[in-house]
Length: 237
Image (cartoon, rainbow, N blue to C red; front, side, top):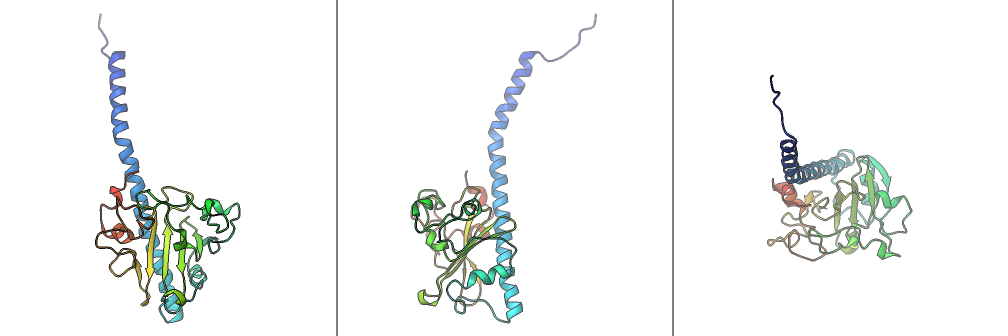
């Protein structure tokens, strides 16, 4: 009589247990890598989209859009003309309509408690100052959220163009993770925040620090995110 060879129940259970252990050890890393790659790709795409809008303005108007020629609250409608916009979020400081909270920052100056948990700094130790993003917001067709700081000549012509690359309704909602800042300078250049010469440049990386607790920590991470190959892989969810 010939005996059939096979696995015992104990052997099957041991194999399944080993597979489970290996999966538990590797899946978080795979998921983290996938998230990181998605954020990296989205940042580079949005950087290109904003630059393309500025270049289209130049091609049409014959002059560079600079911080010296654009007045307060004038930048948002100009950018929207050259970008694929899904929703206009207003200026970002007026009372919020119900559906705005799904895609736009619920930044209500009359009810500041509604905005207190909107975004965190780089290491999650503090909420950020949304006044840096309150001169215009709009959502692109891919879900990215564009945020503008356009104070005008009366306050030094400071213009920041920021982007939440996966939208407000998706985490992690942190500066330097999915929210990145750029500066439009006096020559019409779009500079990644954190590059030398930008307001949040620091030799000590005070604005892109794993330990600093200030509410602007993360504002200077854009340059690092675009120039360091392992930047996103170092982020730990």
